[in-house]
Image (cartoon, rainbow, N blue to C red; front, side, top):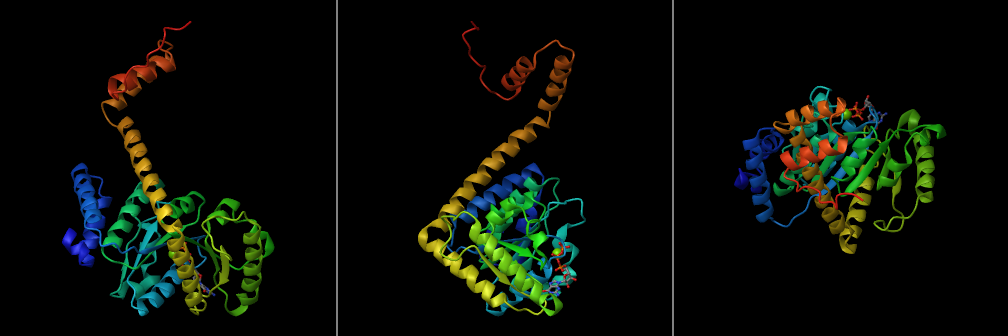
Length: 331
Ligand SMILES: Nc1nc2c(ncn2[C@@H]2O[C@H](COP(=O)(O)OP(=O)(O)OP(=O)(O)O)[C@@H](O)[C@H]2O)c(=O)[nH]1
Ligand SMILES: [Mg+2]
């Protein structure tokens, strides 16, 4: 599988993503070995990972299709992945509207993969991170990671990407406050979509409003002069896409030269390592024998036979190999 991925074979890539998404313990071992093997065989080319977020209906799918087609038209290989916070929704956002990305889905230079179906956002995101690494090993030039903006998902996608792009709709001034400050602060580029037809003038005004709002935010060390930036685009008319790409490249280039790019990736690698450990520890609590012991000790605490502290101490030392706390015996 590794050789196939390194040759950029889509079938091998698709199978590898299925492997990293698998919940089976033996698959997990294979996935870990594969990811490390690819890291060791590192070809040294990094994709540009672009996180893209926006509320439902803002035009993410339409934008990704148009933007993706523009990039493949320039000879670039484009992968589209999703982090779907609402796993209850069947198949995730991308699968749901593959019809809207019909052209891109057929493009030999593009690879589209729906969100893995996992029970929670953190799990989805960790597997998406591994899918990103697989796509990068398969020599994709641009990886678009889509998420529906619901607050938490943007933070997660920002931890997966080199650039974070926020897609917004044209709207009146009161909507501007609807975008949470924290989300604004994460954005590298804000794109006001639907700048066409009747909405064009509103889009231009909205864009100016956001440009103003961005200027008021605290200056971030990872930004050159003029960033974060707000631009108007029309995914339907395919207007402003080339300019948006130019800006993304300019920002990425600057960050590479100044070391911010590498620093961000290093920080992210650490973040996901810690998330993996935390998640593994938590899942231990939900499996036997710890699960049963926890229920038993909880019963003893409820009945008033044990203090919460003593019960926790017993669980941790007996089942989780933590050495006992050594005290002086109290004063
Ligand atoms: N006028 C105009 N309409 C657009 C544009 N881009 C998307 N739309 C329309 O907006 C609607 C929603 O577009 P989608 O691309 O499905 O939006 P989305 O953000 O992917 O939506 P979800 O997947 O539901 O989160 C569709 O009816 C599109 O045709 C645009 O640039 N201009
Ligand atoms: Mg969509």
